Length: 307
Image (tube, rainbow, N blue to C red; front, side, top):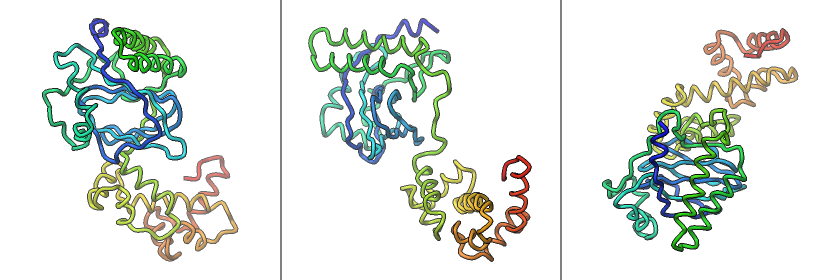
């Protein structure tokens, strides 16, 4: 597989910095590869509908025709270096630059489809051993920052040698990626899409009050019916079942406070009556809340978990 790496002929066409500004709140598509490297702050990148946390030392590889969007952390927004590149020589090597640098054609990248499919680059195939994941957390953050900064500074000069200097730094990045500067542990990937994550966050922040399925589903941006559908596909639970299970989990945690009655716990967890709480818990677990409380306390006293 090394022959695939040795045959690479990367062409960096654009380089820049991402500041604290927002991206449009919809997916973008690009014709080539883009690599982001976060130097400070935090935020989220959504790739193919899956949301990933990003922070200093995170490298993101965005692939051709891959739906993606950036969501900034308003309290601590990201700053990143970025480059657009081809991995191999192409006769239309400079065509994407004209699209990206023209304001009207750039905004068409948010149309949901690329209008010139003949210019979409193929994804790079380095073989299983050398395949680069979408999200990479590096160990030597300063080293990677220095290399991306060299690419950026070379691009700013646009002199006769800038491509040579940029490629030299890019090869340093590739070498570092394959030379144990990347953390060995798997990269943490968010389990749910951005829309479903929004719905789950809403449940966690509002379970104490009376909320309904429509109100939760509306957090998913799409229609309530579609949001409910993708919620069940990803969590394997309906919205109402997930809400009930989350409330029950919180109720179990409150069982340890013996000053709270079952009715107190029911209302604190968003159940509109202790009667409904009792019947729903009995149906779900086979025990009344009082019986379940005794079981939870007994399990913990014996050194087990409260589940």
